[in-house]
Image (tube, rainbow, N blue to C red; front, side, top):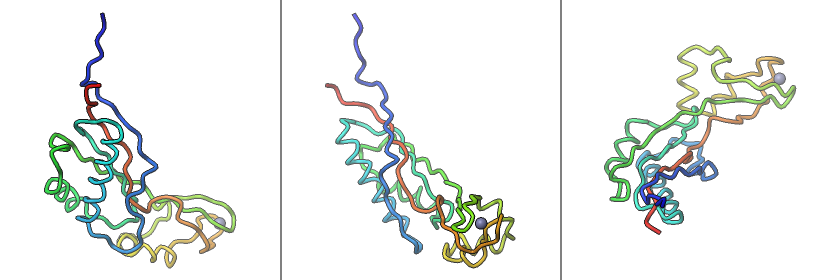
Length: 160
Ligand SMILES: [Zn+2]
């Protein structure tokens, strides 16, 4: 007779949950609260008694201090997260030209370090320094690399 262990780990994909999508510098503590409360709701809906891992994606152009955010998670976590690991991953920025349709990455732009830093600090600066790598048009959209969202939550299911 096979018995299904209630301790089987269950990994849930939650890429559709956007936590924040704002242009100005954000408060890491507010962000940590948003992640924990969203993950708590998700754990309840999915019958998890314990969360073991939370993966948070952070856009390259989103100004977030990873150290501060990690510290905030440790301070704010509830018993549901007592053994949880919070993993922060960076999503590289991508741009798409509205003129010729060319797509390119932040790295491909070949900017100096000073300018790269200025853009990370104030994402709006991107439109001052970044031009299409193919036709040099300044008319482009940022298709990836902004916002913060939950990528996956891993946890242990409650006994049925
Ligand atoms: Zn172009």
